[in-house]
Length: 381
Ligand SMILES: CC(C)=CCC[C@@H](C)[C@H]1CC[C@H]2C3=C(CC[C@]12C)[C@@]1(C)CC[C@H](O)C[C@@H]1CC3
Image (cartoon, rainbow, N blue to C red; front, side, top):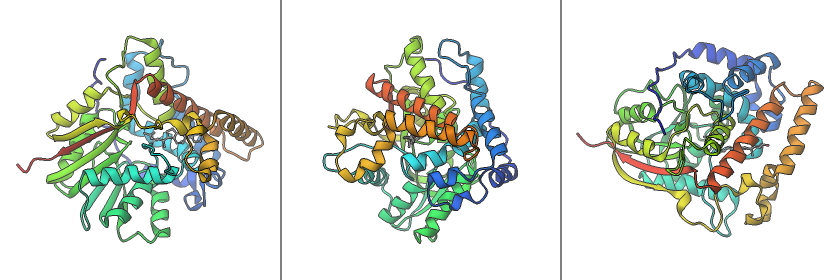
C-alpha cells in the first residue's frame, strides 16, 4: 500500500469554530442525553456541517476513488473531523455512551465495566500515577479522561478540535465534581499549543486515526512529552493482510473511513514506523484484537446479542442491532420531514451504520484492528 502523501497543516481559526459551535449547537451541550441534544440543533448550521463532511464521500466508491480524492480529504483533515463530530457526537452518546472507543470483553463482565477496564489497562501500561500531568489526545466528551482521573488521581488535560465535544466534556466534569483534575483544551493535535516537555505521560484512545499522517501527531506528542515520559495509544490500523490492489479490501476501508470521519487509514507497518521515526523507543506493541478472547471486540456493533454478559446491558446493545438501527434511523428520517430533527440526521446515522458494517467486515476478515497498542518512551537525552 502506498504511504500517505506528506500533508500540510490546516490553518486553525478558533474564533470561527467557536462561533459555528454556538450557532449549530446552542445550549445543547447541557442536554441530558444524546437524543435530547440532537433535537436542539440549528438546521442551517447542521446543513453546512453535512455538506462540508459528505462532499468528501458522496458518490465515491472504492473502484472510482482517485489519489486526488484522498489527498483532498487529507488536506482538509481538521475540518472533516470537526464536522464529523459536529454530526456524530449525539448519536454516539445515544448509541454507545460517553467513552468513544471499543474494548476487549471478558466472561461475566458487563459492557461499561469492559470499557472502563480497557482504559485502566492503558493507564497502567504507561504508568500513570497520582499527581502526574497527563495529556489525553483527542479526548471526545471526556469519558475516558474522567475514568482515568478517578482511577489514578492524575491531572488530565484533554485536547480536542471539536468545540461541542469540549463543552460536553466540561459539563460532565463539573457534574462529576472532577473540575479540579480535568481541563479541556481546543486545538489541532497536528499543531499543539503546549510548550515542549510539558507532560509526564500522554495517551490517545482511538483518536489519532483522524490524523492525515501519523508522524505528524506522534511527532507533536513526542515534543510535548517530558524526556523519560511514556506515550500509549490504541490505534485504528489496517492489518498487514490489507491489500490495496483488492477492491473488496479498499471498499471495507472506505466504509470505515466514511462512517468514522477518517481521511486516510494506514496499515500497522506505517503506525510502527511513525512511532520510531519521530524518536520513540518502542517498549511494547501488540494487536489486542489478536488475543483470542472468547467474545470479539465488535460483537455489540455486529448486534451479536448472544455474547451479552449481563441482562442489564440489553438496553444498551439492542440499539446497535440492524433492526433497531433501521427503525431508529427511519424514525429520524420522519422527524426530519416534519421538522423536528435537523436535516442530515438520518444521512449521518446511516453513514455511521455503514461504517459499523465496514468495521465488522474488516475485523472478520482480519484486515482491521481498533486496538493496536503501542507504548513508546521519549529517551532521556
Ligand atoms: C471514530 C473513532 C475513531 C472511534 C469511535 C468508536 C466507536 C465509539 C464508534 C464507531 C462506530 C460507532 C457507531 C455507533 C456508536 C459509536 C461507534 C460504536 C452507533 C451504534 C450509534 C447508534 C447508531 O444508531 C448506529 C451507530 C453505528 C456506529
